[in-house]
Length: 339
Image (tube, rainbow, N blue to C red; front, side, top):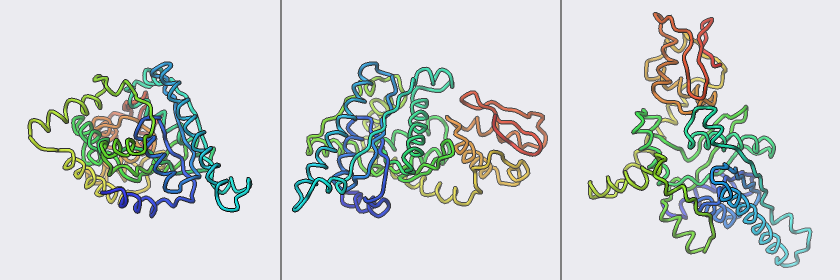
């Protein structure tokens, strides 16, 4: 898909005159997304940056970089308004103003407390920050810079962890996530754009960005997938496998969207054991996955879903099972609920 098609698709779903949040880490992908949106006329944006406190002074420098980037764009927007024919100072408001929200979280401490990986803890903290910002700014849509290579890597990670078709869907162009009572719409305009295309865009427009040195660290699984596994598979098979994996994820996402639409509302705090038991096994698992996600349970895998599903078994004597993040599912009075 070329840039014109991506632009047309974005403008159709998200008009430029509406208000949006945008996640900006300071890396090339999010910097490119912010520049692209502003060039398309998106001016009622609020840039959201969470300092993960993982790299000391470098993390602080990332936050300062993003803050100064927003200030520079605001200066350019104000200058452009003043250069309009017959423009006066009052015209500055019509040019728009980019907002900025800065948050901070001790990700290592959170990961240790919740017994999560660093990557999962960082993701959960980011979306909690996005949800809080959405509440404060009265805006329910955030744009993030996940791209086609991210989608391929996520599918492989989920596959190696033993995920079902929901895991193969990996990420969707538009999804909704309920966080602390906020239904947050997450839009990923670059999900059809490859990393090399973003590199080319950054080069053409001479955009400055922050390099994250941890991206070269091979300890995180995602980095091993990116730097070792995918290149090895392509070398061994003698072909570019990314496009085919990406296509699989897109097909799975479309199918998942339909299946989700067929399931009942998952936002209730509890589940009926009788209703869950009446579903086919495949839909039981899907209903539980959707419900656990709605309850903000992180790292939901097959084993966790099967433990919760066992609570609906007629012959089981188990009334409580463990879940990731020091949470528990319990059955009482014909209902399954979380503690």
